[in-house]
Length: 373
Image 1 (tube, one colour):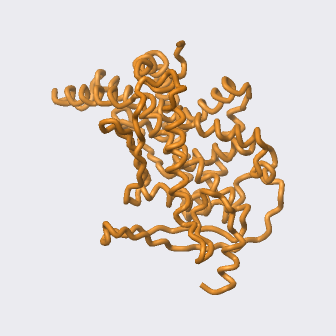
Image 2: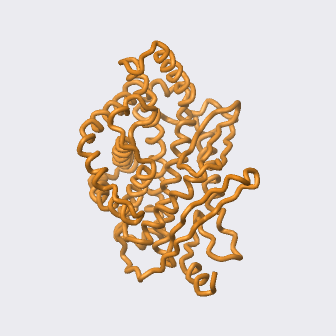
Image 3: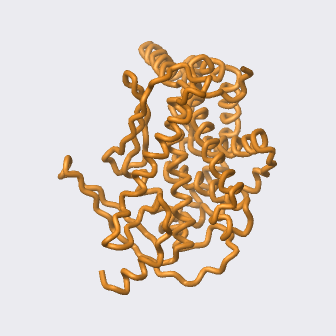
């Protein structure tokens, strides 16, 4: 790399602890974001497992956090003995940072109170190697700019996305999903042994599995919103470049949309016999929870339309900055499946509040929403 390019890279440095980029050869920053997310996960786990948490009846458990050598976007949680285990795929980190820093390098998705000068784009190819698996290299693209404001917005959006994903897995652990999940899966297998791939009983069981995913999403977005409120309360430096503090909520909304953009499915046929609800339904439910959480816990009336209004524009920007043209296909999907999606979302919410939340209450390590204690 020539000296001019190196200086341009250095100008784009944000100083964020969760920055992905190594801007200078003599600075070891490339791995900093990996340690950041591991420490964040362990800190949250310790907070909910503290002796001061009267809801936690299983003191003494430990969290193991690791990254899986896989370029796909995924994470997992499981219990083994006295340990709770969360693993995040390498591809989750790479894809999230590239998606949002690409977005903020090539466009201006968030209203800012500062005028951005022209920026230089750096389009790089990253090759990750693993000494334990020398034949399995991970190749990824990473786009960023020499403008620290653009990079700062992109890094925060990636950070909100990754925290949402990690907190989703934490929700499975802390809300005591494991035993219920195993019990439901066993019943599904029993039904399938009867030779039927679908009946009313299977439909109800899959709805229960999807409700656990709904609950984990609820837990996750509430943790992200709690942090965003702290940003606003302490007047974080990020607020100073936004047109309005509530634009930080738009950043979260766009981050969540980006997450489901990366995980997008457009199933309108088999969604009732899948473990996860379609991404469209999950995203809509998450926005409902943002609105409810802000109102209940912070006495803040957030108009959900404020979050939704710009999503078509962000969808278009995500497509254009990634060289894709999927907007017409997705619009057609929304029109054809939107009504059914709304009905199914209400079924998930009703199933959670009337049944699943009560089943989780006994063993959950945190208060279950909608339950009187």
